[in-house]
Image (cartoon, rainbow, N blue to C red; front, top):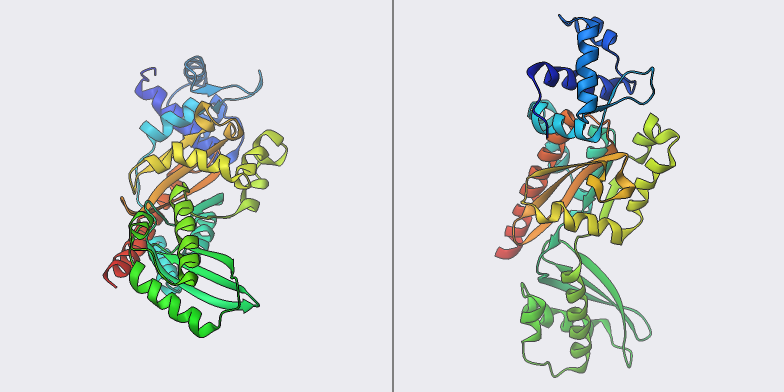
Length: 348
C-alpha cells in the first residue's frame, strides 16, 4: 500500500465523506468551494489524479469527478476515520429498550435486528447465540394426538428445537411429564458426549426420547451459527447503488442462502474474538455477491461457551463512522445480556 502525504490523506478523507453523504462524484472545484480549502483547484485535481493512479479513487466517467475505490474505503476505515463511541443518549435509549423487553433470546434477537437497521439505515444481520458445545437444559413432552408426542428441547444459551416423536402405542400426559422430569434431572448441563456416556435407561419410552435428544444435540453442535434474524431491507433498496443494479441486489440473496451465509460467517467473524469489529468491503475479493457492498460485523457472547454474530450489510457508501460504533456497542450489550443469562443458567 502506498504511503500518502498529509495532503493526500486529507483529500481522500474529504472525498470519501462527501461521496458517502451525496452519492455524487466529487470534483476538485467542489472541494475547494465547499470545504474552503487553501489550495487551488488545479493542485487538488493533480492530487486526485495521483490518488486515482494509486488505486484509492476512480473516475466513473471521463468528465466526472472521482469516487472512492474499494482500497480507498479500506484506507479510510483503517487510517483516516476517527474512532468514536456511540453518543451516550443513543446508548441509553438502546439499553433501555433491551432491559424493558422480556428476557427471551428470540425477543432480544428481533429487537437487535430492528435497532441495528434503524441506527444504520441498512440491512441488519443478527444470529441467535449458539453454544460451541451444545449443553442440555430441559425438555418438555406434550401429548398431541394418538401416538404422537411433541418434544421441545431447550439448550443452555437459549436454543430451542421441536420434534414429533411417534410412539409404538399411546402414552398419557402424566407418564410423559414424569419421563421428562427424570431426564431433566439426569441431563441438566451435560454435553451430548456426556449424555451418551451415561448408563442406558431401562424404560423403552425414555430410550426413544434420549435417542432423539442426542441426535438433535449433535446437529446443534455441528451448526456454525444460530438462527438468522434480519431487518431493514427497504432501507437500502432505494439507495442509488441498489435502485438499478441487479449486481448489487444479488447480495441480498445471501439472506435466503443459509449455507453461503454460514460459510461467510465461519471464514470471517466467527473466527475472531468476541467484541472485535470486522469490516468487509467489496467482498474482499472472495464473495462475488458482495462486490458492491460492505459489511460491518462483530461477535458477541461468552467466549468459548455461547456466541453469536451481529452486523450490517449495505452499500460501500455507508456511514462507517456511525455504523462501526453502533455495531460495537450492540455487540457489547448483547454480550452482557447473554453472559448474565448463561451464568444464571449454569448456577441453577
